[in-house]
Structures are given as structure tokens and as C-alpha cells.
Image 1: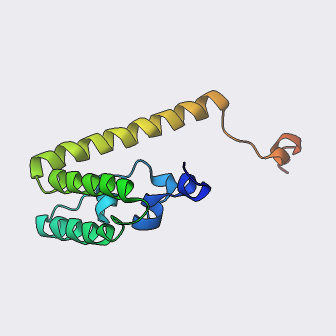
Image 2 (image 1 turned 30 degrees about the vertical axis):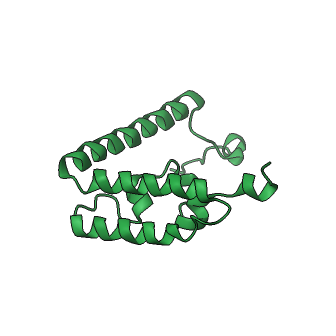
Length: 129
């Protein structure tokens, strides 16, 4: 049975420093890299670093979660280390960001811009001639 601490445990945040606002994490975030990193040696070293760090948790109470994230890191390395796969992945990321921007813009258009409560009661200034 899951305890309260198991339910609230966030391995992405606790182990990798990825906040809830950054979910799902990108391959770059999983490896602790800047978006768009293309140096294969840097990508490989980042994957080794993150995997080594996570392996310390494989024998703990969250071993199943650790194994799943280790597999995600391996997949991230596989994609980012291959220029063709990385280019396709980056294109998908850009499309996802633009789709999110469109959803936000549509929401603003439907609701209208936010107004300050003072704006509704404020009289326009008179221009003296």
C-alpha cells in the first residue's frame, strides 16, 4: 500500500531538479542540458552523469520509478545524439510550444484582456487647450 510520502514523491523534482511546471520533461531537461545542445560528446557525458546519479536510487524504495527514469534518460540520449532524430525532436518541441501559444492567445481573445478594477471607474483625462 502506498504511503503518503510515496504518493507525494516527485522523482523528477527530487532527483533531477525538474519542477512540476516543466512537465512532461523534455529530453534536454532529463539530461540537464540547454535546449538545442548538439555536441554529441556533451550529450553522452550528460547521459552518463544523470544515469550514474540515478543508479544510487535503484536499491531504494523507489527502484521501479528509478528504472523507468533511467530508461527515459537512455531514450533521450539515443534521440539527442543522432542529428536526424534530434532535428525531428526539436521540430516537434517547437510545434508544441507554438500550439500552446495559440491556445493561450485564443483564451485571451475569448475572455478579452484583463482589466484593472480601477480602469472601470477612472474617468478619461481632460485635455486642456
